[in-house]
Length: 273
Image (cartoon, rainbow, N blue to C red):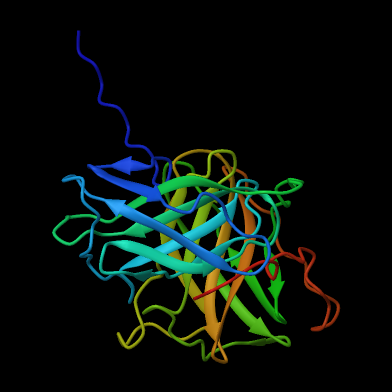
């Protein structure tokens, strides 16, 4: 009797993969002043990994988000000689957080994303997943989403950046690209880190207003999308909810260019380092 091979798990659901393990040293996260958050990647030989392959200008990307998909942060810790990663870190509110280490060990053919839960003590008040939306604002920028997530297939998503009603055509490179997109599945926080078509200086990629991504989500359901983009020397994060298998209603055209976005999400608790 033959048995079909099991489908690969989405990234971020495991604390260990291919013999590599994410090992938090810090037992909790701070909700006050930033405190050092420390962890190691332990290799198949049982020793901390000290050599990595650089991807998008960094050896490791750390994503921190609460289990209800609030308080997203994309940060870059420093590697110490003994294989310990460390970064001053604070989260905006109490709760159970998921930390994702996105990295590629030197000599390993592929990148890995390992995840672990770390608490922030206090009164935890989870929020519901915000409604699906086509447009959101952050720090006066409006970001509009075109395209829909297709369960089990490739989806073309275009995120367009404007400010004061005018398209932004001079986005600045951030980590080797004009935008970075992380998608997390509601419920289990399955992780997708997607990079846009092309790269700065390739002769075919423009610095805005459109940043185009091709991504695949493993199944139907709700997803939270986080777009990092840089303009005016500052990195900002725009957040969206999208439901794979259900088209999001078209964005309404505001009466004036100064009208607020209906979402209001995207400026809370974001940190970039």
